[in-house]
Image 1 (spheres, helix red, strand yellow):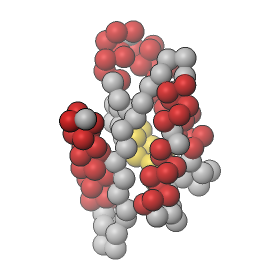
Image 2 (cartoon, helix red, strand yellow):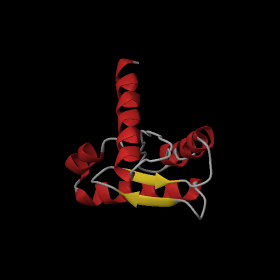
Image 3 (spheres, helix red, strand yellow):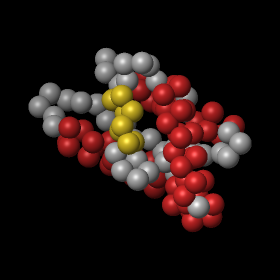
Image 4 (cartoon, one colour):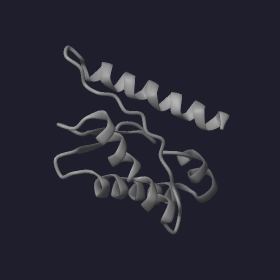
Length: 111
């Protein structure tokens, strides 16, 4: 999630909680019933999308942005995607997704 701390600071934890709910609803609305959405940390989620390729995962996760932007209290997310590879641990694939997320955030800052 983008700007959760700023939302909490400006509007209190109730505002941050509303933002969390919005993001979860957008994620579950854009993903399939078989996909998992797990809150991984304060403002981070891990989504497990079995049986699809990276391009489809990117498309599905991009579909999260429209409802967030159109919400009464707009929100946004930055997404890092990684594919599970043979011999991967959950820690390894999450680390690659996290690295992809930080690369995207750096690109947004430069733009």
